[in-house]
Amino acid sequence: MHLTRNPPRPLWLLPLLLLAALPASARNLDLSTVPERQSVQLTIYNSEDLTLVRETRRLSFKQGINPLQFSWANTLIDPTSVTLRFPGQDHRLTVMDTTFPHDKPQMLYWNVQAEESLEAEVEISFFTSGIDWAADYVAIADRDEKHLALQGFVRVNNGSGETYDDAEVRLVVGEINLVEKIAELARVGIEDVARLQQKEFDQFRQKAARRVMEAPAPMMELAASARSAQPQAPKAVEKEALGEYFIYTIEGTETIPDGWSKRLRSFTADAAPMTVAYRYRPAEYGDRLVRLYLLTNDTESDLGQTPIPNGRVGIYRRQGQGLSFLAKREIQYVPIGDKLELNLGEDPEVVFELVKKWVFRNNIWQRYPKAQVYRRVDSGQVEIDHQAAVAGWDEHEVYAQRIRNYTDQPIEVEVRRSFSGDVAFKSALKAQRHDFNTVQYQASLKPGEKEALSYEVITRQGRNAKQNRVEIIQD
Image (tube, rainbow, N blue to C red; front, side):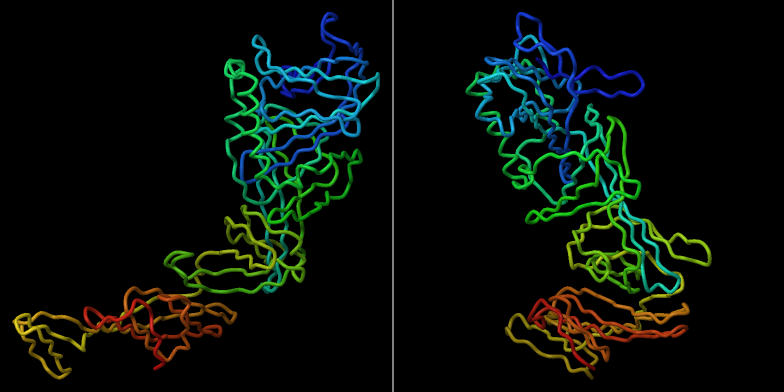
């Protein structure tokens, strides 16, 4: 009896896992029909080119040795990961050995010892590359920009060389580290495998098994199941936590043909509360003031069941009877309870500019090398002794941050400015230190209002510098 994958059928390119009889001289089983798959389960990671495949079939065994053949021709299956199990029948069925024939590439043989004639469920599991998934979203703000409708989708792409019919699809969110890449292991030539002695090959399999240990262990023990009914409503997505990982289980089953992509709905939040913010954060958004929609991944937003995977989001706003397109952006992974930020870019109705008003220096110190003394130049002293070196001074820069709100809504503007060296930030603004060298302040502007937010930056140079951080001075 052998398990093999037929060449792709014309037009559809759908390779199938089949069972057939070996020649009479090499078989104990005589099968006249091909057993159908009972179930197949795909567990797809989005952080690596890695998919765990588990499939089951029901076979008839005769007492004694039953040879089984498994082929992975024209696929990206990792041959070192192929495992054969007999759920519930381990005491009556035993894999005696596994061999890789020299003259038959991309193929292996199992010899299965049966204590008696019986029918049993066979489970074959393996890793494959070439299957991945990506998330995308549609976000629609209402006209008042108070609530956001958010729909999430996942797109499964199959380029593995194998079609998976009626598969249960599970999508893993979280980062993993592989010892080897599955795609590389899948391309191990039969000559390379044949050259390995049994001991060396066992070590090779053990090395590959370490990848499994670094994946979420509970996932590997989840039983495969198939649901034959296809619901008419959009498929539900069941979510469960596995430590730092999450699994999305798509309701029902899906046929994932080789070379095809399928887009499936993952969640819907009809009216998530949101706020509009304007931020200037050069380290995050570049040197510009950007407009953002902010919402939280929590139950109050009809979210919060799982982290939100990274992906692309199309952002729209309701206008009259239609929608206006605002932006298309990449979003990063959002844990439960964290903020989801949708960056809309610059707003042409909000003018933001920085004007330097004047610059001067004072608190100048001179050093006389021969006498090894310092002298401070008074603020009213015009002449500086050019025979002495300038050892320190304070650089004063006075700015006006001009903001004009031409929208018909009040806005909140947050500004972060970073400085280097020993700096004093002097202003009447209610500024706060975001970190050791970054100052943050905010402003509220009514519709049509403009503000000139003034502040002074004092940078202590030379011997005047005592620390490497920003000091805030309330003016």
